[in-house]
Image (cartoon, rainbow, N blue to C red; front, side):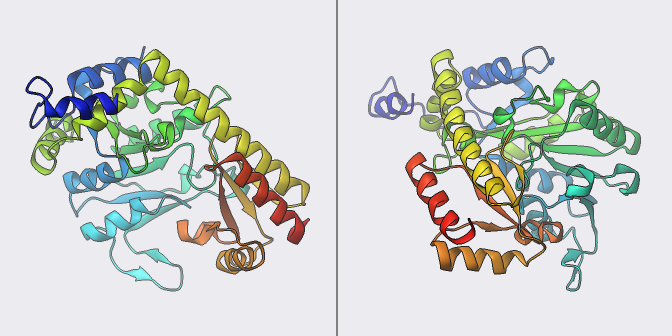
Length: 350
């Protein structure tokens, strides 16, 4: 795919110049067909990009600094950090490590890592990552139905980050658009980074349904199209050729092979920490294992594992105050490296 796209650039027939900012038509068609079959999502609602992280910032640009925001806590930092850059958050409360104008939805082990929406204030936008980075928790169909109903009642728009949906194995929804009514209150963003190892290649997509409207009735899709055509010149046509190969039948089978490989890494990591007596979450429907260290500060645990095991984990508090006392362990790596890491951990904590 990518090699063919690159090779064609040195021929008159293969050189295409600027492409459509919304993405190659063939790729948009295939993404709609592969990931949204039966959900009434058309290719005109799928916008190809250089990754979800970039789209998150562009989404915030579209809604503007006056928009109010809710985020899971803990959560991928880009939602909060991009909001800070937009000037939408107010000042940081040093005592709580939370921003004044952000509604934090606590996702703790006590509530199964799904927020208590009855205690969540009304906001314009709700950022929701599922399966969650960093906890690895995956919301059920019932929970997502509750979330969609909550958004519709409040006139909120959910920005649903499905970057790890391909790892879901227990029958839970892989797209928010499996939930009735979601196409009237949700934007979904996704990426090839964790599907096909495109982390440095950069390719993703965002779905903005035609039924999603602003309060005045104008389509959000129309404004998103304007944002993409103004701020973006389209993903590399070489990379898009690679993406097209990934969503072919053989390419998708290869992607699922990669997912299976990482999920086995997850199983080994989960079993190792469980066997050593730790509190362990995630790692079933997601490529991350969320490990509790009896309330110890996350950065202290990070430093200890680095010093004693020569291993890098991610401190939970880096994802928000509710991540304190945990570290995130990633399954992305070679099997031999994972096995070596487990042996090192067992020597110190086993």
